[in-house]
Image 1 (cartoon, rainbow, N blue to C red):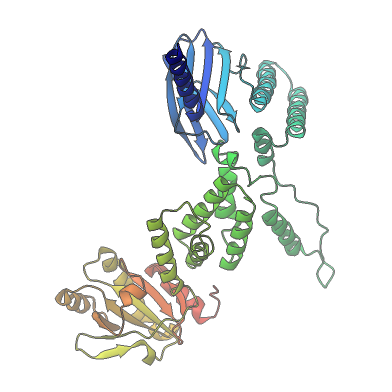
Image 2: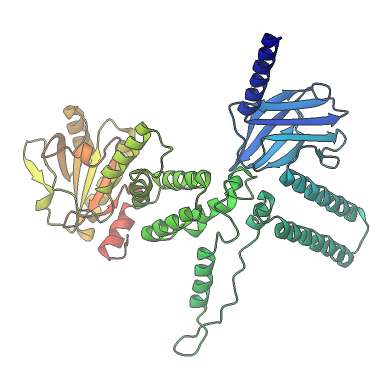
Length: 473
């Protein structure tokens, strides 16, 4: 008898451990279901992901995992034909649902003790009622005036229902979703006037734009990581528009300040903070705009080098920090050391002897396909406009095939300073981060970088702006 009690206790302990180990369990009974399986998935930014599948066992589907945790967000249960129902998860680990196959949303019942889940489906049922009334409204033969009048009634009722939900459940993820989709209301600024008394519409628009830019995220709770796992129109499209459109023409230092302000809004949300730091860093690592590398460098120094980005693996951390340190020396406005190399006649040339206003360091190779297109275009501009824009080109060969280098110079009649990069006063490949060709840096008389990686077709325009003092960075 004693051994029997021990065995029973042991089995009970195993059962309890199994329950404790379960990270999530979602059980849904669908009366009359004919589907063989359901899929559990979730939204993330602009995509959807399948997480789990469950077989039909007596019209009941059970999703269960001991290893994965369901982070806050909007999830969906879908059959293999694409029919689905969304469920909103906040802190739940065990969810029990019941519905009918004819209409999953309409007949959904929450059998578990989740208040958040019950509040969500209560709202969804009321919302579906309004949608049904809207569909009936579309079928009616009404005049445009009558249709708009009844539509406004439905719209007002829907807005009232949303506001009531927000007021009753301010911390509910659905409330965060409702707020996130609200537009920014710009206040009515008084029209400023110029010295002559006329309206200054430019200043007025500038004030409106400044307000919009500074209050862009007022309705989006960036401390709520659950917004990351919502349909793309809720969070991601609005978030993306901020960097792609609102920040598009801002100066680098302005973007850096706003980036830090946005990240600070994530507060103690590790999930959102991780997303923001990673996304902004990668966004400006890959930016095609000149000077945006300074934003990436700042992000690395602020969040990676200080250990704030503690989710990054040691190898990736080391690689990113090393790249940031290298790029820091190549930012616009940075002064580079004088470079000295030999030409084909073994005569030394150095950038410090250049008498022109600007000097172009062009790292290239005759075997590079892109170089074979870009170099002749730059050469043509050099021959025609060298004195007009007061610039010299130091073209540094990056490869060891000197015969191919000399042949290319002769065939293309390259009349600038052609240098053999195999012999130099320092490791330019390491310093200028030359991993591919062509690579271009435009320096001023003091060897400060004033532009870089300019396409050949845009080089004349940049030189013209530099000559006129209009190119700012």
